[in-house]
Image (tube, rainbow, N blue to C red; front, side, top):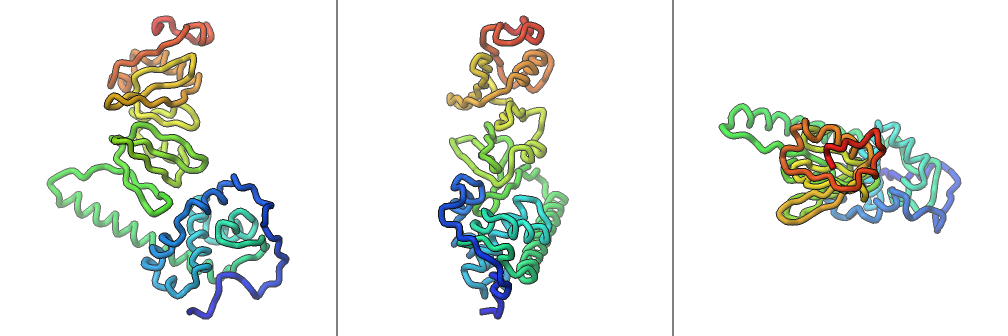
Length: 278
């Protein structure tokens, strides 16, 4: 066992025990119950040589801190400050009481920097191999999107996406063959990585693949996607309904399927409703 502990026992600071004082619906508490900590701990121990010498409590702190750092897009220093200020994040890291200075900043900073260096080397290696393959291969590699999930990484082919739904700060991909994948990335960031001539953000919480769009019900404010005989209902905003009505004849993206917009014309304001689509 290494002669240090991530829990800072040298600093005398008041503790406020959580007990039943925290909101169980807070995103960090929900996440703490979803993460397979033992499995994640084994993955981190294999990847980072120094971690096998740490206790299970310390492993949870460093892996949890790494998740917080990525999730919030923070630097190492800001991550440690965020942990010190947030009781819900301290709960995620396994603490039973709030402490203004819960961790040894020097040690945790060193470990998080090691993780960053490891990920940077890994990403550089992947990019280099991908470049080498693309230069030497006589075939085209599939263009897949890579996302973090609760167990590691997931690779998603955009062609297989039917729609995506927001789940708080996370998102769920609904794919072909009834497959689902939850990723630790919000819908806004995902949308920036998609082809906007195919994928449409119909509402704050939904992105759809327009290739599977078959109908829009104005009165219910839903769009219906069809794939292999199955239907999927997604919410759509009034603004997007108006955009569909205005652009239906000209936008190439909607020529993938025969699109019907069904409802009483009076469900839209008179000036905004195009009667040619009734």
